[in-house]
Length: 341
Image 1 (tube, rainbow, N blue to C red):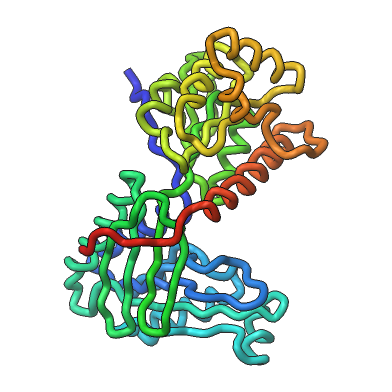
Image 2: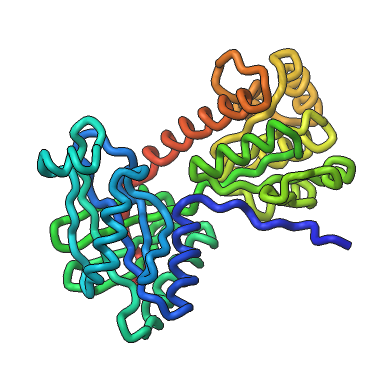
């Protein structure tokens, strides 16, 4: 019998953490580059990561491509043993050489993880603890000083993600990636999954129906065969989760929506026309869902554009998700630490 579960497709920070941990366990030196500040227009926000190891392999992005070639080269060549600050776009030559948009400037902290002798145990433990905290859907804060000390602290629930740099120490608060459950394997779900992963969402695609699962032809988008209500109760019940009913099949869409509307998910949506959406609301109300609770349901799903094709519908859906994720992140409280490690 085939395995009914599938691992989610990871977002940006989780992917970098996974790569960094793998390199450290192989005995490689690693440098983690973090954007600590930006001025003017910049392609990536503060807190974005680019990791590079001593063989030149890299993971993540800090500029969308205009800085990476120089940053990768100088990071490996210089092989810093202590955290160092690197500025781009401060001078006119920088802006010309690296084609920073609209005169923008970026400051990065480049920190070594591991050392030249290959003794990486402390760095491995640090990255493992960070990975476990985020896997357990908790917030964490990394503290990195220019003198070389690195610490990890647990943050209070709801701490606002982002970076604070006082000239001597970086404090980088991270939250778990926004996690999406897509119900129903189809062309719209395929494109939503691909676009959402590219936009740094963590995505799980749920399809319990045998006919759809057996004919699924996209191996890079694995299916989880478990029922949507079980997945929501076990893995998608926190304020950084979203549930999208995309099956066009009330048998599994409604099952998932009933569970989602009882959860703390930040986004609950269902695909369908205005007429279909009204029928769905009436059906859920007949099953005992309160009128005020039904207001949480976004249906029809997505931003209002003249979308017709599966890809166009997916673009409207992911645009709406990005907007709501921004509101979610700005609603969190500033960081307060509770435990040093």
